[in-house]
Image 1: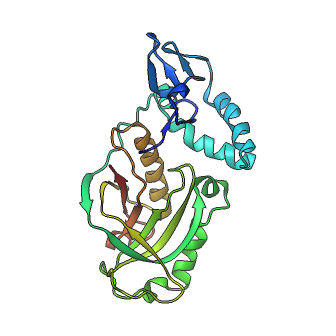
Image 2 (image 1 turned 180 degrees about the horizontal axis):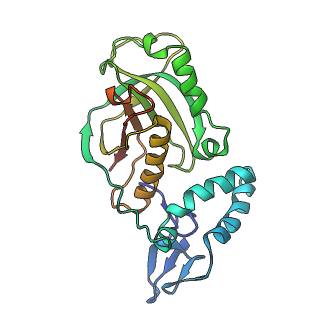
Image 3 (image 1 turned 90 degrees about the vertical axis):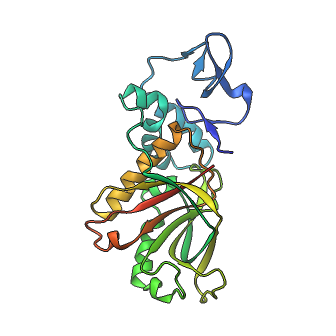
Length: 254
């Protein structure tokens, strides 16, 4: 089950005693007790920047660098319900283009372990990993592709949903019985149901980054529940020109 988080401060809600309450003193799962009590925000005049200032010290206490924590909160908090509504944006405009069910698949390529906080801090691993993929011509080293000409950017082995570490692999889909050359890594993506999002056309790094921001917002407000069993970007012939690309992003859901 996906982790509930407070739609005001982003705090994980693991126990009922952390839930806020409505005007009838019934528990609400959208907000924590620190932010929402008796049907109202405990500090209704609090601004987004003030909330960020409150959250950052707790993240630093947990071992994150202050600059990375602040950057992450600046990206993350505006997507939560309290601040989306305040900005007149209820995240309803960005929706999946379709829902599909896919069989399990095997991907081979090169991989790295990272976090969203690292990627936002300027010390990310995704950029260098893509650079290595192209410079070392990794695609040519992958045998028996079951989806020729298509590159996958897969996210798996999530530690704590979108907030923790995960593995990213860049590679291709291969036959389940295929032998993988030394130096390449493998990810087994289980059969799953996916919400599929299609990016706008444009420079590939820009349109994919914008799409992920919208997907993050969508996941916080949608009735669909992410399972984090394995998500992936699929780069097909529409991505041949990196300055005018379009990419499908598959998000595993329950």
